[in-house]
Length: 211
Image 1: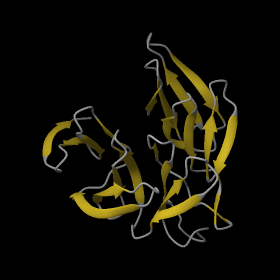
Image 2: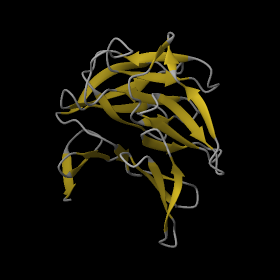
Image 3: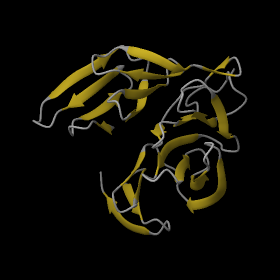
Image 4: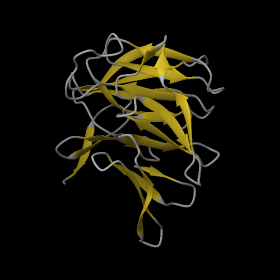
């Protein structure tokens, strides 16, 4: 899910190819249909909703009127696998994961990796290439730390974000993978599995949300 500046919550229904809007007045509506398997969402500072289209193998920006702009659909001339989740850094750069669930025959890319789209939204680099199946991703508001869940390996890692968008100082954060993930204002990390687990910035488990 992603929240706009007014507090409305947007979330995807992947099998039905829809993005729903749950408004602050409690009303549920459909924001977009035929979304090509839209999955992870995140709002940029201009109020556009960026979405990973797993079925469409691309990253798009959707303006408030629902108009789509493709931001990324290839790396080194080859299509992505199935873009899954994303986070927008304070400078406007975009980190997104590109796993493949289901059949992994004939993957367009040579593995399942993490990419960075520069703030000018023209250049893309691969920033992580040693994960089994990366999924959830979230960064700190100061733009200094990125958390990435390797769902395939059952681990979540932290990285230092460098000024040029590259990542260094890889550290094991917790022995658990995650689908979508988020942070609260105190820097606690929320991971999603059979329950939602809450971890402080050192990785210590401090609570769970049963679902």
